[in-house]
Image 1 (cartoon, one colour):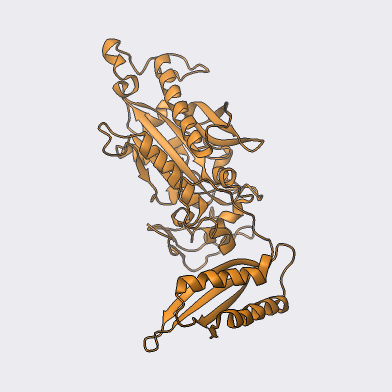
Image 2 (cartoon, rainbow, N blue to C red):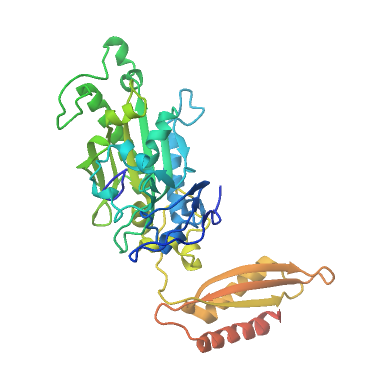
Length: 438
């Protein structure tokens, strides 16, 4: 939902295809003759600028990978919204959660429907990934506002991965993830019971001021801003706790007015966590809404997750390194914990397989094995995981296989070094516990 830093089920298998390559300019990678993604099939033209790196990111859906911190944070926010907003009677959530929208959108949806000027820098091929002149990868989850409102949705969250040609550093990646929130109000919903005692219109013909749009009355602007800020402050307290200072900063977005950014003072620095504002009435009018007003917000999950979990580099969210993923495995969305940095040196994998001694159960053996491995391997052992437990159908003997991950924080481990440690572990397993190595 932002132009500045936010333009504002299931691990998916590869769901895009590119056919035979066609000719293109020397400065661009050759476009495919057809491009398919999320059920859409398009013909690229000279505007095609999707790089191999971006094509690789399309193969993964981090928000559906349950051990990824972005998935945990997404669910934490959804749980908060579900708990705070209930329809009358409290039997069901007021907000629809939408996380399955196509990642390819029309230029109209990505820009025009959000009142982005025709000459805005965000439309350039240096900023946006284009399939052709009419379609692009969504640059923000706001690209779905227009169509969802036209479908009749008043309150919704749009969650998904978005794509932008951006800087290369620890805070930027060509794909990142956003949550867009939209809430629309009728006069009765905005003013509540006071409307019966003192009828208030939503609209007027006035001039735009620093505090409101020309079409909105002062009462409308004040009520919308109060509701918006209260909602988002409560959300940030839910994420970061109540012992942190917050501040509102004026902002400028094409699709909201007035517009704001919320910053949280977290671990000795101010962190911008979201952008928001009162939806431009022209935007709602384009979507067929003539009797409602609303607010919208957009937040970037990576920025929040980096602060919340202490993740130092945005690239780590894409890591398949088990040293990263296992730290989040089994965690609940509302659990507070910090990521422990892993070594930059590569992992070395070894397996350990053996038959258990008679009379010893798998759980007991697991505890003893892990203690011995840790005692011998010490800081060279990053992880130990059981990958297989097998009972022989005839002898009833039990076999276990352990995957040992070696990694030093000081240096890259040589095979010779790991071989010596692993041999000693195998030897001590036989000596101490009487296992039969496989």
